[in-house]
Image 1: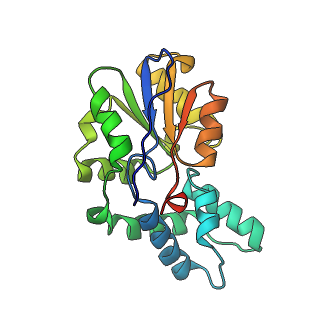
Image 2: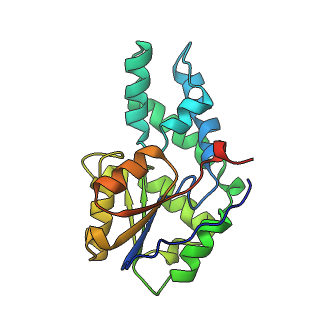
Length: 202
């Protein structure tokens, strides 16, 4: 994965919030492979192109299954697909790597300002990803899609992260790669640093 230079905007901020997959961690290709394996198990004739997968980045797995069902006239079981997708993804944890350009910012500010991870993934997957990469102790809080009423692109997950950090939303800077996440962070009234996605890199 090519690297890039990103800087925090010249604004007064009191907390940093990071998306996980595709932002802190180069994990989106592994997630796509897990999706393909899960859909092959539970659905015949399901079409899920890679560009569509990236366009849905940041959304909870069950929401994506609901969208696939609606668009393709299917009746896939969201819970079963989500369980299979998680199982396949967890097999790939050892292949994941940090995205240095973003991880270096998190490492620089750890312990200096409150920081959180706000991920559309499940609690188990997010925690195991952070543990595998040895960065669990970088963050004061971790918020996942199962802990809020609405997933990205709703602002709920970002507002919950700010609440747990004890910082006003307007004083938070969010690092996000997915359109849904960027939209959600902006709805929350936060400054957003848009991270180039995997498909945008050479």
